[in-house]
Length: 156
Image (cartoon, rainbow, N blue to C red):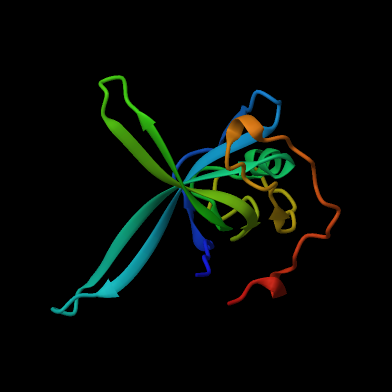
């Protein structure tokens, strides 16, 4: 049976990106994304549901995300959903889902609405490095030399 794991989200950053480096010196940026769902309830009142999603991007695109993204900015992310599992200090089993971002696109006015950052030229859509399935085996190979996709490549 075929499997498919692809997620595309548009939302606003809930916090500033947090840059860190893996043991092999590959950049990794974590950020939170708030995705809103607006609907009308049975009484005709407008309601909003917010889904908070943790995201991570690797490699040179992580450094770009760290430079240009800020809390409140709107971004489109495309990637795959991964689950981390671990055992807490008290012995309980824990797990967490996260989007490993493979592509992202800055949305909204550069440096204007949707964020508090300085006014800059908006970079093109970036392709991230493939997210590692096992962190210890991961080594950054850099960009594959392919041009970044344009807005016309987005399926909606």
